[in-house]
Length: 351
Ligand SMILES: [Zn+2]
Image 1 (cartoon, rainbow, N blue to C red):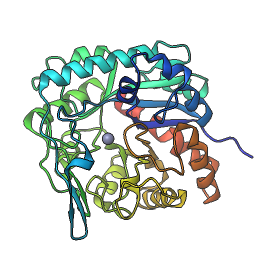
Image 2 (image 1 turned 135 degrees about the vertical axis):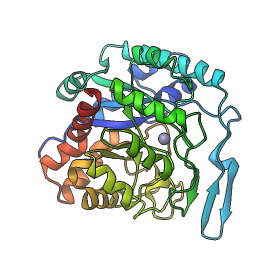
Image 3 (image 1 turned 180 degrees about the horizontal axis):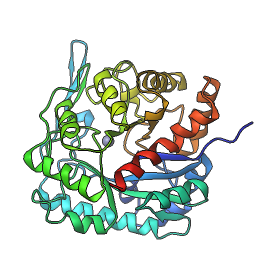
Image 4 (image 1 turned 90 degrees about the vertical axis):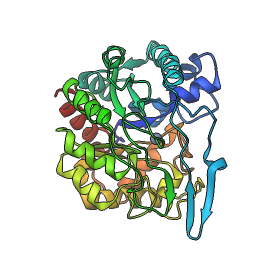
């Protein structure tokens, strides 16, 4: 039996989950019963590194359960209102504190370069990259951008599924195309330009298609969507259409496949009972459309209802075993697991 490759994962929300679970971040190092990801489970699952998101929840504790309305053939979930900048900065600073705490533990490494990530893929440490999901903490004039860069920020998404100063976010709708919100604002265009200048990844996850195409126009870097799935399999508004997948491939970018049940299930329901065959179907679709060089993983551990056939970070090998059984070569598996992410981050961070 060939060894399964080390995984570089494009997205998790473990910082917020940790903050909610315990005032003591050492549960990440020692392991805890809740959530999807901690150091022991990362080791068990072969997770070598990940993008750790700062996600600021909406103040009104808006949840998908509350705001869902059923339609004739699916559902709509209305977007929460914009965050207040002060609250966004307060929670962001708090969660950067959690990031600093966990990357201070033996066995965890703060990653700001591709060399850092390669050391984790080849070694025993778990690498962590600081990412902003929605960038509400960043001032519209970018006056605090450098301060966040200095704290380790190397990746950001201009919006989650709510409007920000930089972009509109795509609402949850099923079935729906992604063309259901506005694109980048003028400040958003300046943010993308600054990211290109500084070598910070721009993540198009949760942008409406208008914003996705705006990033394509403004940025000279490969297009990246850290966690999404194929609209051709699950027609959720947050999934990527064939045109978008073609653009990602044309620019040399990458899509990280999410493990979120509502994005994977063809019926769009947030029910975790999903066989691995459905996850493999998305990988097959993305690979058929873009080629194996443009497909990677973006689990959304601790940020979504993860399909129970994977379960948590310790379950990553079950996916790779299924992919191998489906005919993917060891070389393909290495690309899906970490090489594609390393190639794209190398191109973006060096720019
Ligand atoms: Zn997300």
